[in-house]
Image (tube, rainbow, N blue to C red; front, top):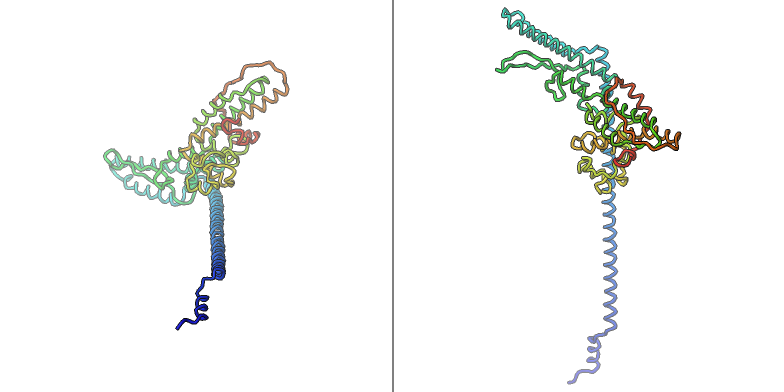
Length: 422
Protein backbone atom coordinates (compact mmCIF):
# COMPACT_ATOMS: atom_id res chain seq x y z
CA UNK A 1 0.00 0.00 0.00
CA UNK A 2 1.47 3.37 -0.98
CA UNK A 3 2.17 6.27 1.44
CA UNK A 4 -0.41 8.98 1.81
CA UNK A 5 0.78 11.99 -0.24
CA UNK A 6 -0.54 14.46 2.30
CA UNK A 7 1.36 12.87 5.20
CA UNK A 8 4.61 12.79 3.24
CA UNK A 9 4.37 16.45 2.29
CA UNK A 10 3.69 17.38 5.93
CA UNK A 11 6.74 15.52 7.19
CA UNK A 12 8.88 17.10 4.52
CA UNK A 13 7.70 20.58 5.40
CA UNK A 14 8.40 19.96 9.13
CA UNK A 15 11.99 18.96 8.53
CA UNK A 16 12.78 21.31 5.68
CA UNK A 17 15.51 24.00 6.50
CA UNK A 18 13.93 27.40 6.46
CA UNK A 19 16.81 29.88 6.15
CA UNK A 20 14.99 33.04 6.96
CA UNK A 21 13.48 31.74 10.20
CA UNK A 22 16.74 30.11 11.44
CA UNK A 23 18.78 33.23 10.62
CA UNK A 24 16.31 35.43 12.43
CA UNK A 25 16.44 33.18 15.48
CA UNK A 26 20.22 33.04 15.40
CA UNK A 27 20.48 36.84 15.10
CA UNK A 28 18.11 37.32 17.96
CA UNK A 29 20.14 34.98 20.15
CA UNK A 30 23.39 36.77 19.15
CA UNK A 31 21.99 40.20 19.93
CA UNK A 32 20.79 38.97 23.28
CA UNK A 33 24.19 37.51 24.16
CA UNK A 34 25.98 40.69 22.96
CA UNK A 35 23.78 42.89 25.12
CA UNK A 36 24.34 40.63 28.11
CA UNK A 37 28.14 40.60 27.61
CA UNK A 38 28.17 44.39 27.10
CA UNK A 39 26.27 44.98 30.31
CA UNK A 40 28.60 42.66 32.18
CA UNK A 41 31.66 44.47 30.77
CA UNK A 42 30.26 47.90 31.68
CA UNK A 43 29.51 46.65 35.15
CA UNK A 44 33.02 45.22 35.48
CA UNK A 45 34.56 48.48 34.20
CA UNK A 46 32.48 50.49 36.64
CA UNK A 47 33.49 48.22 39.49
CA UNK A 48 37.17 48.53 38.48
CA UNK A 49 36.84 52.31 38.36
CA UNK A 50 35.32 52.32 41.84
CA UNK A 51 38.16 50.12 43.11
CA UNK A 52 40.70 52.47 41.49
CA UNK A 53 39.00 55.51 43.04
CA UNK A 54 39.00 53.79 46.41
CA UNK A 55 42.69 52.96 46.07
CA UNK A 56 43.53 56.53 45.04
CA UNK A 57 41.54 57.81 48.01
CA UNK A 58 43.46 55.46 50.30
CA UNK A 59 46.80 56.66 48.86
CA UNK A 60 45.71 60.30 49.16
CA UNK A 61 44.48 59.78 52.71
CA UNK A 62 47.70 57.96 53.59
CA UNK A 63 49.76 60.84 52.17
CA UNK A 64 47.69 63.39 54.08
CA UNK A 65 48.15 61.36 57.25
CA UNK A 66 51.88 61.08 56.57
CA UNK A 67 52.14 64.85 56.07
CA UNK A 68 50.06 65.47 59.19
CA UNK A 69 52.26 63.21 61.29
CA UNK A 70 55.41 64.81 59.86
CA UNK A 71 54.06 68.28 60.73
CA UNK A 72 53.13 67.17 64.25
CA UNK A 73 56.61 65.67 64.68
CA UNK A 74 58.22 68.94 63.60
CA UNK A 75 56.01 70.95 65.95
CA UNK A 76 56.79 68.57 68.81
CA UNK A 77 60.50 68.89 68.06
CA UNK A 78 60.25 72.70 68.04
CA UNK A 79 58.33 72.62 71.32
CA UNK A 80 60.94 70.31 72.84
CA UNK A 81 63.73 72.62 71.71
CA UNK A 82 61.94 75.61 73.23
CA UNK A 83 61.45 73.82 76.56
CA UNK A 84 65.07 72.66 76.45
CA UNK A 85 66.27 76.24 76.03
CA UNK A 86 64.01 77.52 78.80
CA UNK A 87 65.30 74.84 81.18
CA UNK A 88 68.85 75.63 80.12
CA UNK A 89 68.48 79.32 80.93
CA UNK A 90 66.66 78.61 84.21
CA UNK A 91 69.47 76.31 85.37
CA UNK A 92 72.04 78.97 84.52
CA UNK A 93 70.14 81.55 86.56
CA UNK A 94 70.09 79.26 89.60
CA UNK A 95 73.85 78.75 89.43
CA UNK A 96 74.45 82.50 89.17
CA UNK A 97 72.25 83.10 92.18
CA UNK A 98 74.21 80.47 94.13
CA UNK A 99 77.53 81.94 93.01
CA UNK A 100 78.54 78.64 91.42
CA UNK A 101 78.13 76.55 94.56
CA UNK A 102 78.01 72.79 94.07
CA UNK A 103 74.82 70.74 94.38
CA UNK A 104 74.13 69.25 97.81
CA UNK A 105 74.91 65.74 96.58
CA UNK A 106 78.40 66.82 95.53
CA UNK A 107 78.96 68.56 98.85
CA UNK A 108 78.06 65.35 100.69
CA UNK A 109 80.25 63.34 98.33
CA UNK A 110 83.23 65.60 98.97
CA UNK A 111 82.77 65.18 102.72
CA UNK A 112 82.87 61.40 102.25
CA UNK A 113 86.09 61.70 100.24
CA UNK A 114 87.67 63.82 102.98
CA UNK A 115 86.54 61.33 105.62
CA UNK A 116 88.32 58.58 103.70
CA UNK A 117 91.53 60.58 103.97
CA UNK A 118 91.23 61.10 107.74
CA UNK A 119 92.93 57.85 108.74
CA UNK A 120 95.88 58.66 106.50
CA UNK A 121 96.15 62.09 108.11
CA UNK A 122 96.46 60.35 111.46
CA UNK A 123 99.08 57.94 110.17
CA UNK A 124 102.49 58.10 111.79
CA UNK A 125 104.04 57.32 108.44
CA UNK A 126 105.12 60.71 107.04
CA UNK A 127 104.89 59.42 103.47
CA UNK A 128 101.28 58.28 103.93
CA UNK A 129 100.47 61.52 105.71
CA UNK A 130 102.01 63.58 102.90
CA UNK A 131 99.99 61.60 100.36
CA UNK A 132 96.78 62.35 102.22
CA UNK A 133 97.58 66.06 102.30
CA UNK A 134 98.31 65.99 98.55
CA UNK A 135 95.03 64.23 97.85
CA UNK A 136 93.11 66.74 99.93
CA UNK A 137 94.74 69.64 98.10
CA UNK A 138 93.94 68.00 94.76
CA UNK A 139 90.30 67.46 95.71
CA UNK A 140 89.96 71.01 97.02
CA UNK A 141 91.49 72.46 93.87
CA UNK A 142 89.38 70.22 91.63
CA UNK A 143 86.13 71.13 93.37
CA UNK A 144 87.05 74.79 93.01
CA UNK A 145 87.57 74.29 89.26
CA UNK A 146 84.18 72.60 88.92
CA UNK A 147 82.50 75.48 90.78
CA UNK A 148 84.28 78.00 88.55
CA UNK A 149 83.20 76.13 85.42
CA UNK A 150 79.58 76.02 86.61
CA UNK A 151 79.64 79.75 87.17
CA UNK A 152 81.41 80.37 83.84
CA UNK A 153 78.85 78.23 82.03
CA UNK A 154 75.96 80.21 83.49
CA UNK A 155 77.73 83.49 82.68
CA UNK A 156 78.21 82.41 79.08
CA UNK A 157 74.49 81.68 78.85
CA UNK A 158 73.64 85.06 80.36
CA UNK A 159 75.93 86.89 77.92
CA UNK A 160 74.73 84.90 74.88
CA UNK A 161 78.30 83.74 74.34
CA UNK A 162 77.28 80.22 73.37
CA UNK A 163 76.95 79.67 69.64
CA UNK A 164 73.57 78.96 68.09
CA UNK A 165 75.34 76.01 66.46
CA UNK A 166 75.84 74.22 69.78
CA UNK A 167 74.54 70.64 69.57
CA UNK A 168 71.59 69.45 71.66
CA UNK A 169 73.85 66.88 73.33
CA UNK A 170 76.29 69.54 74.50
CA UNK A 171 73.47 71.83 75.55
CA UNK A 172 72.06 69.00 77.69
CA UNK A 173 75.49 68.49 79.24
CA UNK A 174 75.92 72.16 80.18
CA UNK A 175 72.42 72.21 81.59
CA UNK A 176 73.21 69.18 83.75
CA UNK A 177 76.34 70.87 85.12
CA UNK A 178 74.19 73.79 86.24
CA UNK A 179 71.45 71.62 87.76
CA UNK A 180 70.83 70.30 91.24
CA UNK A 181 71.94 66.73 90.57
CA UNK A 182 75.52 65.70 91.51
CA UNK A 183 78.01 66.23 88.71
CA UNK A 184 81.36 65.66 90.40
CA UNK A 185 83.14 62.37 89.76
CA UNK A 186 86.41 61.10 91.26
CA UNK A 187 88.99 59.12 89.37
CA UNK A 188 91.60 56.96 91.06
CA UNK A 189 94.99 57.46 89.42
CA UNK A 190 97.55 54.65 89.46
CA UNK A 191 101.27 54.43 88.89
CA UNK A 192 103.12 52.29 86.37
CA UNK A 193 102.79 49.24 88.62
CA UNK A 194 99.04 49.72 88.96
CA UNK A 195 99.26 50.95 92.53
CA UNK A 196 96.79 53.72 93.49
CA UNK A 197 98.31 57.18 93.73
CA UNK A 198 96.04 60.22 93.91
CA UNK A 199 92.35 60.86 93.26
CA UNK A 200 91.45 63.39 90.59
CA UNK A 201 88.28 65.48 90.48
CA UNK A 202 86.26 65.68 87.27
CA UNK A 203 82.66 65.85 86.13
CA UNK A 204 80.11 63.48 84.68
CA UNK A 205 80.64 63.92 80.94
CA UNK A 206 78.07 63.82 78.12
CA UNK A 207 78.54 60.04 77.87
CA UNK A 208 78.11 59.57 81.61
CA UNK A 209 81.79 58.80 82.11
CA UNK A 210 84.43 60.74 84.05
CA UNK A 211 85.55 63.90 82.28
CA UNK A 212 88.40 66.16 83.33
CA UNK A 213 87.75 69.83 84.06
CA UNK A 214 90.29 70.62 81.31
CA UNK A 215 88.24 68.67 78.76
CA UNK A 216 85.09 70.40 80.02
CA UNK A 217 86.69 73.80 79.56
CA UNK A 218 88.00 72.89 76.09
CA UNK A 219 84.62 71.62 74.94
CA UNK A 220 82.90 74.77 76.17
CA UNK A 221 85.42 76.94 74.34
CA UNK A 222 84.59 75.08 71.13
CA UNK A 223 80.89 75.85 71.60
CA UNK A 224 81.36 79.60 71.95
CA UNK A 225 80.58 82.27 69.37
CA UNK A 226 83.75 82.69 67.28
CA UNK A 227 84.26 86.38 68.03
CA UNK A 228 87.78 86.35 66.60
CA UNK A 229 86.58 85.21 63.17
CA UNK A 230 83.67 87.64 63.31
CA UNK A 231 86.13 90.45 64.00
CA UNK A 232 88.33 89.31 61.11
CA UNK A 233 85.38 89.33 58.71
CA UNK A 234 84.33 92.81 59.82
CA UNK A 235 87.90 94.06 59.46
CA UNK A 236 87.97 92.64 55.94
CA UNK A 237 84.68 94.30 55.05
CA UNK A 238 85.82 97.62 56.53
CA UNK A 239 89.05 97.48 54.51
CA UNK A 240 87.11 96.90 51.30
CA UNK A 241 84.69 99.72 52.06
CA UNK A 242 87.68 102.04 52.49
CA UNK A 243 89.09 100.85 49.17
CA UNK A 244 85.80 101.54 47.44
CA UNK A 245 85.50 104.97 49.04
CA UNK A 246 89.10 106.05 48.34
CA UNK A 247 89.32 104.52 44.85
CA UNK A 248 88.54 105.64 41.33
CA UNK A 249 85.33 105.16 39.39
CA UNK A 250 87.19 102.78 37.07
CA UNK A 251 88.47 100.50 39.83
CA UNK A 252 87.60 96.83 39.62
CA UNK A 253 86.69 94.71 42.61
CA UNK A 254 89.44 92.28 43.65
CA UNK A 255 87.30 89.24 44.40
CA UNK A 256 90.19 86.78 44.34
CA UNK A 257 91.97 88.31 47.32
CA UNK A 258 88.70 88.48 49.26
CA UNK A 259 87.97 84.81 48.57
CA UNK A 260 91.46 83.91 49.76
CA UNK A 261 91.04 85.96 52.94
CA UNK A 262 87.63 84.45 53.70
CA UNK A 263 88.94 80.93 53.06
CA UNK A 264 91.78 81.61 55.49
CA UNK A 265 89.30 82.81 58.14
CA UNK A 266 87.15 79.69 57.71
CA UNK A 267 90.15 77.38 57.98
CA UNK A 268 91.46 79.18 61.06
CA UNK A 269 88.12 79.34 62.85
CA UNK A 270 87.96 77.88 66.34
CA UNK A 271 84.31 76.98 65.72
CA UNK A 272 83.17 76.75 62.08
CA UNK A 273 79.64 75.99 63.29
CA UNK A 274 79.60 79.51 64.71
CA UNK A 275 80.34 80.94 61.26
CA UNK A 276 77.35 79.01 59.92
CA UNK A 277 74.81 79.36 62.71
CA UNK A 278 75.67 82.78 64.19
CA UNK A 279 75.02 86.08 62.43
CA UNK A 280 78.14 87.42 60.71
CA UNK A 281 76.60 90.26 58.67
CA UNK A 282 73.16 91.85 58.82
CA UNK A 283 70.53 90.10 60.94
CA UNK A 284 70.49 86.52 59.62
CA UNK A 285 72.95 83.64 59.60
CA UNK A 286 74.27 81.46 56.80
CA UNK A 287 71.99 78.56 57.80
CA UNK A 288 68.96 80.86 58.05
CA UNK A 289 69.61 82.42 54.65
CA UNK A 290 70.28 78.98 53.18
CA UNK A 291 66.95 77.61 54.37
CA UNK A 292 64.99 80.72 53.35
CA UNK A 293 66.30 80.92 49.80
CA UNK A 294 66.35 79.07 46.51
CA UNK A 295 70.06 78.34 46.84
CA UNK A 296 69.42 74.65 47.42
CA UNK A 297 67.69 74.36 44.04
CA UNK A 298 69.35 72.15 41.41
CA UNK A 299 71.39 70.30 44.02
CA UNK A 300 70.54 66.62 44.38
CA UNK A 301 69.26 65.19 47.63
CA UNK A 302 72.16 62.75 47.57
CA UNK A 303 74.67 65.62 47.30
CA UNK A 304 73.21 67.11 50.47
CA UNK A 305 73.42 63.84 52.40
CA UNK A 306 69.66 63.25 52.57
CA UNK A 307 68.77 59.59 53.10
CA UNK A 308 66.84 57.74 50.40
CA UNK A 309 63.87 57.39 52.75
CA UNK A 310 63.69 61.13 53.50
CA UNK A 311 64.38 62.04 49.87
CA UNK A 312 61.44 59.89 48.74
CA UNK A 313 59.11 61.95 50.94
CA UNK A 314 60.64 65.32 50.04
CA UNK A 315 61.17 64.74 46.31
CA UNK A 316 57.58 65.15 45.12
CA UNK A 317 58.35 64.62 41.41
CA UNK A 318 61.02 61.98 42.11
CA UNK A 319 63.66 63.50 39.84
CA UNK A 320 66.22 63.38 42.71
CA UNK A 321 66.85 67.14 42.31
CA UNK A 322 65.66 69.92 44.60
CA UNK A 323 63.41 72.33 42.69
CA UNK A 324 60.18 74.30 42.96
CA UNK A 325 58.13 71.26 41.91
CA UNK A 326 58.97 69.64 45.24
CA UNK A 327 57.13 72.46 47.06
CA UNK A 328 59.43 72.15 50.06
CA UNK A 329 58.16 73.78 53.24
CA UNK A 330 60.25 76.14 55.37
CA UNK A 331 60.74 73.26 57.81
CA UNK A 332 61.93 70.97 55.00
CA UNK A 333 64.53 73.50 53.86
CA UNK A 334 65.67 74.11 57.43
CA UNK A 335 66.19 70.38 57.89
CA UNK A 336 68.19 70.15 54.65
CA UNK A 337 70.25 73.26 55.48
CA UNK A 338 71.10 71.97 58.96
CA UNK A 339 72.03 68.59 57.55
CA UNK A 340 74.40 70.33 55.14
CA UNK A 341 75.91 72.36 57.98
CA UNK A 342 76.32 69.42 60.36
CA UNK A 343 77.36 66.50 58.13
CA UNK A 344 81.18 66.13 58.25
CA UNK A 345 81.08 64.31 54.90
CA UNK A 346 79.83 67.53 53.26
CA UNK A 347 82.67 69.76 54.47
CA UNK A 348 83.92 70.61 50.98
CA UNK A 349 80.52 71.65 49.61
CA UNK A 350 79.59 73.46 52.81
CA UNK A 351 82.84 75.43 53.05
CA UNK A 352 82.57 76.46 49.40
CA UNK A 353 79.02 77.75 49.90
CA UNK A 354 80.03 79.47 53.15
CA UNK A 355 82.98 81.16 51.42
CA UNK A 356 80.75 82.46 48.63
CA UNK A 357 78.16 83.63 51.13
CA UNK A 358 80.61 85.62 53.28
CA UNK A 359 82.53 86.98 50.29
CA UNK A 360 79.32 88.25 48.69
CA UNK A 361 78.62 90.41 51.74
CA UNK A 362 82.08 91.94 51.50
CA UNK A 363 81.62 92.58 47.78
CA UNK A 364 78.27 94.23 48.31
CA UNK A 365 79.84 96.65 50.79
CA UNK A 366 82.61 97.51 48.30
CA UNK A 367 80.08 97.98 45.50
CA UNK A 368 78.02 100.37 47.61
CA UNK A 369 81.06 102.53 48.34
CA UNK A 370 82.28 102.30 44.75
CA UNK A 371 78.92 103.38 43.30
CA UNK A 372 79.08 106.55 45.37
CA UNK A 373 82.48 107.32 43.83
CA UNK A 374 81.17 106.64 40.33
CA UNK A 375 78.18 108.92 40.94
CA UNK A 376 80.42 111.72 42.20
CA UNK A 377 83.11 111.21 39.53
CA UNK A 378 81.48 110.03 36.32
CA UNK A 379 84.64 110.84 34.33
CA UNK A 380 87.76 109.48 35.99
CA UNK A 381 91.06 108.44 34.56
CA UNK A 382 91.68 104.68 34.49
CA UNK A 383 93.71 103.33 37.33
CA UNK A 384 95.07 99.97 38.22
CA UNK A 385 93.03 97.51 40.23
CA UNK A 386 93.18 98.26 43.90
CA UNK A 387 93.97 95.16 45.88
CA UNK A 388 94.64 96.77 49.22
CA UNK A 389 96.02 95.05 52.24
CA UNK A 390 94.08 93.04 54.71
CA UNK A 391 95.41 93.10 58.22
CA UNK A 392 94.53 89.91 60.08
CA UNK A 393 95.68 91.26 63.42
CA UNK A 394 92.61 91.16 65.61
CA UNK A 395 91.31 94.21 67.42
CA UNK A 396 89.74 93.99 70.84
CA UNK A 397 86.13 93.93 69.68
CA UNK A 398 83.31 92.98 72.05
CA UNK A 399 80.47 90.71 71.00
CA UNK A 400 78.00 93.57 71.48
CA UNK A 401 80.03 95.90 69.26
CA UNK A 402 80.14 93.22 66.58
CA UNK A 403 76.39 92.72 66.81
CA UNK A 404 75.68 96.44 66.40
CA UNK A 405 78.02 96.69 63.45
CA UNK A 406 76.40 93.67 61.78
CA UNK A 407 72.98 95.28 62.09
CA UNK A 408 74.12 98.09 59.80
CA UNK A 409 74.43 95.62 56.90
CA UNK A 410 71.67 94.77 54.46
CA UNK A 411 70.36 91.30 53.73
CA UNK A 412 71.86 89.63 50.66
CA UNK A 413 69.61 87.18 48.79
CA UNK A 414 71.01 83.75 47.96
CA UNK A 415 71.04 84.56 44.26
CA UNK A 416 73.88 86.99 44.97
CA UNK A 417 76.14 84.44 46.65
CA UNK A 418 75.68 81.24 44.72
CA UNK A 419 79.02 80.28 43.21
CA UNK A 420 79.74 82.13 40.01
CA UNK A 421 76.71 84.44 40.14
CA UNK A 422 78.08 87.40 42.10
